[in-house]
Image (cartoon, rainbow, N blue to C red):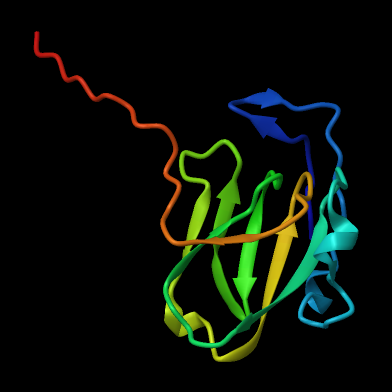
Length: 136
């Protein structure tokens, strides 16, 4: 299993890239993910976990300031993927994915860890862009 030939992007061979092994078969174990505080600022891929205590579940938006690109799970459910390039910088976290008490958030960061997660009342969708359609 794996790459058996040259890696190409749009028919051109790609050179100078690095492949890293991540323990995906063990990712659900609590010891696999480091605490988010221990992982912040690291310029490498890996898992981090955060514990979130909720008194009453409600819809919210998850922000990942300082993170670059990756995936987020709430418990065993994949919430979504994020990328600092945007356009949106938050993930919608619906109330049914949260339970009263402690919840576990797992982050698979592919490039650089941020220092915190933030829960917001509304989405951050990036700057507004003007759409102009022209007809010839």
